[in-house]
Length: 473
Image (cartoon, rainbow, N blue to C red):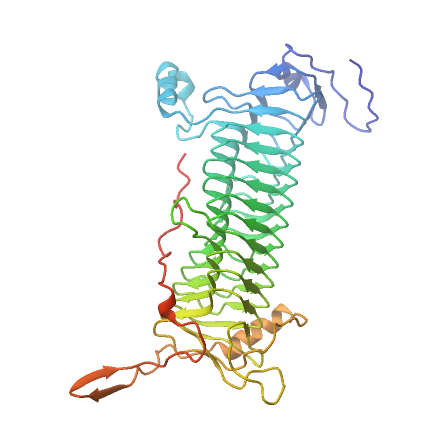
């Protein structure tokens, strides 16, 4: 087999044939060399210098118990064109391995997962390759500049685990059938995850925990329990993703703030394994504040949009929630600004539960069940839209008569509107009026002036912690 390359710079190493030793070629190579590997199946390798390995004919790298297929100990390593097989989790076998191989345990972290690739250097790239069946497909701690491009992670416990890293770029990849996480990114920053297919990962498709400055754009995420989750993660962009058939399409929780969640398609997030028909398009929970939720489409979910449990100063603007059980649900929070949205043909378009939020600026929302008139033909209903829900006292005082389709405000303008309008005092308003009727004290509260009534739908408690807080390998 002959290869011809035009390459200016480092030398191109000899082709490694099936049955030959890749490790010997690595050990004799100079920094910057390129090693071409022919078809065949090869044992574990350690790359301790900046090299490029290019597979011709999809050679296979096999891991064994506690021996990754690839250990990267140098900066500037690239792997391209390989099939890489890992080893799944087997606690009993791992214990027996170290009992029988005492020297192998010396100086090792015994809590490390069985990984296909372990990355200990920065500037690592894997391209046009496939990783199968590992407990962790790619495992990296405290590294910078990892690239996954046009590759597949299939059937792993966790496809990629990165903790304490910076500069991760995942693009054009398929991340499939992982039993815990597709991508688990923790305590990391400067992340780009774009144009990937993330499907049928049992727990979370993409988890960004304690991270910031991520861009997660144009991904297809489907058939996960939680499609994309930000957990105490701030200053991130989540844009133009398509999320369907998850329990939660997008979950923003545990104090995740200052994120922009824009132009995502949240369709049919409704599954029946736990609660028949339950699924949420976009959920902000647990003191997640100062987020912008703009231009998203939520259709066919149980709750299209929801904000719950102590979230404040979020702006929900220019979204379309249609044909959901509930268009938008607000639970136990205040000082969020909801305006310029279309809530159309949902069983219940919009409601509050023990909340106090602001539902209009000079622009309100469109509700398909609004029954008021527009006598002066200015496009704004003459009567406010009263938000149904237990202990709700909020009104949209500028409800639109017809669906809204105006040009978008800039993000700075929206944040200024939040500061201007979402400024309720910390104290709750005076309680409902009480009156004495026939010797009985009756406490009343205002009834919604627009249908539907709250009695038509029971509240659903989704406040429990959504998934395990630690990726326990």
